Image 1 (cartoon, one colour):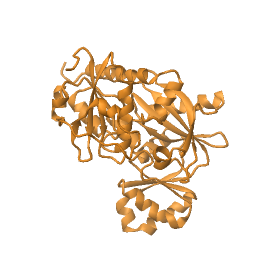
Image 2 (cartoon, helix red, strand yellow):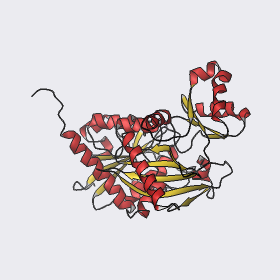
Image 3 (cartoon, rainbow, N blue to C red):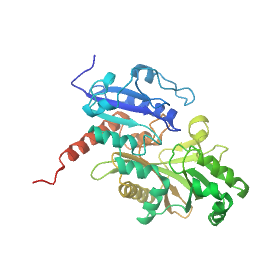
Image 4 (cartoon, rainbow, N blue to C red):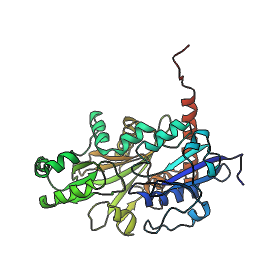
Length: 365
């Protein structure tokens, strides 16, 4: 029996990206933070085959915290077509969607377009902001155009690389060493490698091409890794800063350092920054959020060089909500508890839906 007086919040998680398991871990924590006096959760898992399946909330809350042990449960199918009617078949009524999908086909504007067509409010960035934020190549070019500093990079495309690997890689020598090779559209450090020898570059690029048609090759920056959480609004709010201190043999904040090795990285909360540096970092995070057309939430990752310069590394428009994720930790440190944070994100989604509903859809007087 569902409570019709409460807002029915569909948590959409899993998905068909390489971050499938991390998405499940994030959904578990969002579900735990939902205010039961205001919201009724409708957990919907997307399995590896792309099927939308209604999930049992109690089982999700009891699921493992290790990404190697979590999976989407079997359950009644949820019709995506019924979303247009504000209903999800077996899922019942849906008032607002909280996508907890990381990576491609979830964080890249694809499902956001579906929500727009269905006319259902949803948490987070819209179609444009999601697509831009997901694509490291496009986002860095937009940031550079806006005068926001980023590390030097080059973009490789699969067809050109396969036609002439040596010729495609030769200009990358100008970037120096070390280099980082990254799929342009992926997160959680999936497919990322640190290259310290020229002889390893081709293999690293080929590895990244397993995850995307476009690969970013970026110069290594000697810097501290600083992260800030942004919460949409008018104007947007920015949290205090946190720092990632990597201790993993990979030598960077890799997937294993994040999620597998418990001692792979240490979080400094808050980061030890001067008041002036924190203010500059917060302003840069807010500017990045605005330039990349974001909404609702985002985590902005910065580099702080020994000279005191700040560079934008990347933005995450659906940041992790796992037990070790910076986004909820930073807001809690800034005075906003997980339950209040999740409630605020849902309220922002509803506010945006009301604003958009008031727009004219016809040129006729």
